Length: 164
Image 1: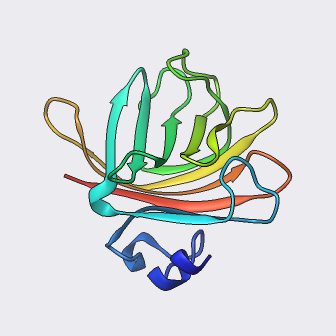
Image 2: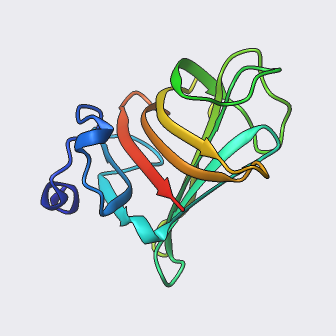
Image 3: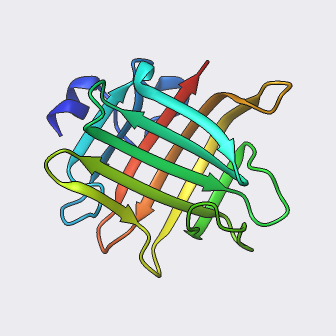
């Protein structure tokens, strides 16, 4: 929590316009949340975003590659992710066909703890994409998203920002 508190962010309550521009990806979790435990944040230069297989993928990674997180977000089948709020998103396995509902999957990895995924049946997420811009070739150039994950009984709240 100290890392996030020092950054001055209140995840899930601050609007993107008031978010700390130095934080590219961050979260805080209630006690017992998995796989996103406690809190963590990465600077904006540690974040990448791209689109593949109908999902926008957001990665945050420490320079040594040993501390990382990934969120994948997708619109319902037949739609492309766009600005808006997506509620009650269901787990969508990587590179699987789009679901009838919004989809997501989330991963967290550390040198000490290995890799965990928010992929259990019944896990859900809500997310709001407040900015999503694509270049003429379709590449993601700007993304601002806030999210709430319910991967276990406890909740994780966070945000991600990517600007190329």
